[in-house]
Length: 614
Image (cartoon, rainbow, N blue to C red; front, side, top):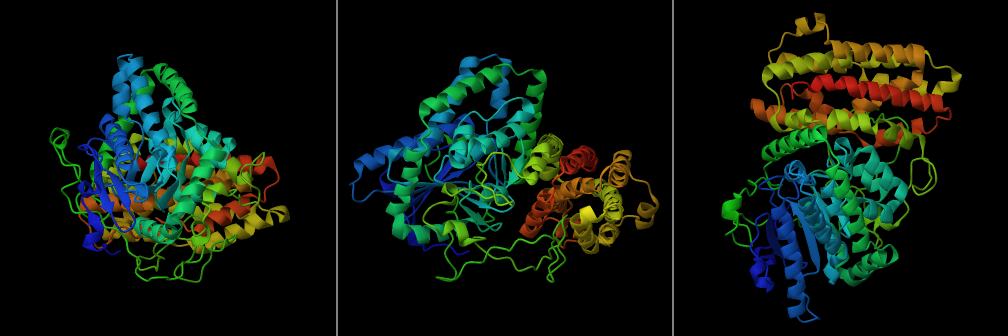
């Protein structure tokens, strides 16, 4: 990406808007599109701290004053963009440390003050401050809980693949009370809103794109380019776009009174939490802070702003660091990349075999830059207004759900419990020592060694009525065979004893997982093997690359030695998602998909042993 001309980026002072000093926001102005960037600094915690809330409220108030003072025909700002300086974090939601302090003190008024301040800024952003602007959330990293609520309050969300989204509050006895139900239900229906909230499931950017909650999906690191592409297309039709977003709010309004009533109930629920839930909040908050400190680099590679709160109070409204990199099109009018075609099984001729479990993608693979597909975001009407389609062709708003939906719902709580625990957050922020990583690889070797034999055992028990499953497993076995040798190569590269690993015996939880998968495939139901496949696919896609990066940084390894397996399995191709969905959506017997759910829940519970070092 290329920086804009220096003349395009100005100090916000020159806007003539009376912005107050900011503690947790960096304000930058791109004159090319009259775009005001509000970049969350997260110098305290990666959450909605009271300082960040106050800054956002200050921006909103100043914007109103600035528009009142400006001439109607020359508004100072057309686009208000919310972003983050942290490379893997947009915002992780409510301030859990603050919650614990208030709840331990039984301070109901304090909880209500926090909740009300949150819904005030969320609703004000939702109605665009009653100003003629378009609001955009650029989520290059994870947006959880209140972080996702804040993004949903904008007119559109631009997200990078690899970012994760969801409402995990159910894990500690709460629910997102600052607009989640209202905002999701208005866009894609109450059924999906309830599924997202009460399951605690963490979704990928691709998932939310398919639902219609994300407007534009970009490749990792290309979010700003995708945003620039949108601005370049939309700016010529700014008034029609802005009016259309306003029409959406007229058609599906979310009133402040509605958000206020939900927030009051949220406070009541919070006040009923016990000591166990508060301890969970504390552990998760500490892990979030550790992760933030680990991920403390801005997207353009510069050090993120970490001005201490005491000094930040006197800081200028604009950051002392250089302006953010703003993307420019590298080829004017270049055609967009085409969306991938769904396939039942994933076997591409090049650059590497595709599988249900993961995508072995070499480092020099040719990624399309910018927007993944312009099929949705090129239209004037945002995708969130169009009915989202499920893999089986039914609209998401219809009664019932696909088999794939039932499986995802059935494993959501166990998945969240296994992957959102503080230990996993610490692993992603701190990595592992060489000894810990070698032990991790030893356990992983045994899991991978038995992956293909377990699928073979399931295929051997598939009759004619399960031909689709049998052939899918054949293809997957062919794609995955020999990958255990990659794990051994990594062990050898780090100086481990390969012969001892091969002769060794896995840890008891890993033995239990392997034994259960054989038992379920051979004695219970062959479809259960997809529970194992689904878990390894999800963990591989969402965590392998991030774990490899964290460990490599801790060990000071820059040439990739010792990370062949994790790095090659760190990206899941969209073909595999479509293939898994199409395969399981052929199921007509509830006993078959229930077997997948049961097996996935067991595998999630036992696979956590591989992260015990975190």
